[in-house]
Image (cartoon, rainbow, N blue to C red; front, side, top):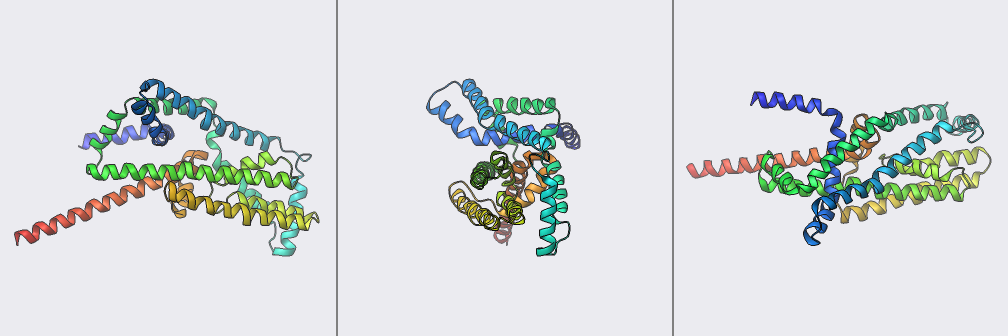
Length: 334
């Protein structure tokens, strides 16, 4: 037992660099499992063909757009100059407005520094070498292919080696599926909707590069508390500082009242149809995930925390069941 534990810890340490691939494969397997079962078991399609189609589809729908948008954001930030965005002029006006109206000195400068720190935490995996990204994707899809084509063996192995009874293992699998859907699909729908509405609003108010800001808003929507609507606040302050008070008030109201409430409406619908993820899990999960996975931590962090809480719930259920059984045996003997 000691040898197994020591070797297991060593293997976990050795595979720590591929943890994103392993977790990503589990998430994609959970999402695409119903589609795989439908095509293979109901339609009678070939297992390998369906697995390859799922891999190709996820590349086209998820991975390539995600990487492309990330590189677009990085390239756009690098190409910002004083002619495109008069950053220093805006910062000066915002600082003057904040100092006069809000009694906040160097508000814009301090905020910009915090955003720079956030961006550094957010994009480390994207800013890394292309070879690392390719290796991560290769391992991810290698694992996903065999998870799908050998689904029965894979799931039977999980049940066999799960550290709790079969009924609890099945309950954990169902809860894990709902948690994955809620964190990945649900949050993805909210983020894309908020980002799109932000881009449309910026276009209507003639703010430069609305598509760029829509992408930024989509990424920020994964951040609890912050979210896409907060981007409307600095835009409104800039309008007010440039003597466009009505525009400034309108865009702030559009962000906080319309985009913010769309978030609440969508979450109610998603929680009813998919599953409920408490906001505290999202907040703590993001702070856990960002240092570990970079931008992928926006998704992986809450997912991991949800899995951990599910395991705690099952452990507590097992312990309570064992206590009840012990009390029954004690009462019977007496």
